[in-house]
Image 1 (cartoon, helix red, strand yellow):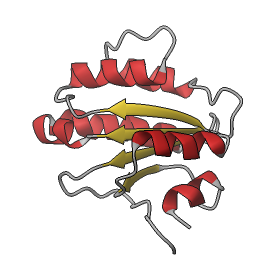
Image 2 (image 1 turned 90 degrees about the vertical axis):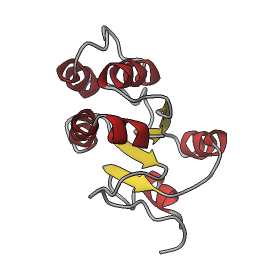
Image 3 (image 1 turned 90 degrees about the horizontal axis):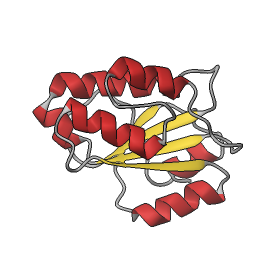
Image 4 (image 1 turned 180 degrees about the vertical axis):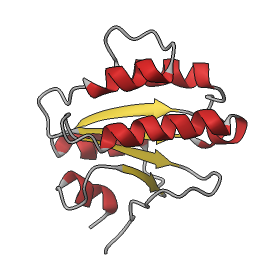
Length: 147
């Protein structure tokens, strides 16, 4: 069973994971939605700074009353981010490495905010999957393939 399938089936608990998989975004979205989860896509390939990340994250998640002004505001709005009646949310962040390479501190803060939200047991379930190559990270891998 692939790591994504295990996550969607509840065999892997929601968290922030790194995923080495080349599936098309549309195929990932279909699998996530077919399993009854809300799919959110964050295209980070052109995100190289904090301001751009904050705006892109807010737009992807469609956060209410969010203007992208700070990580504190993002953290506050993420707490109420809804799975919209589904099992949970899967946020696929493609292209995380430009931010990690250009603004390491901002990437670290983004990672911490998203990890905290993924681990918040009081909120709707949320898994954050960062995909693509980049700097070495101490982030658990979402396995791709049988385990």
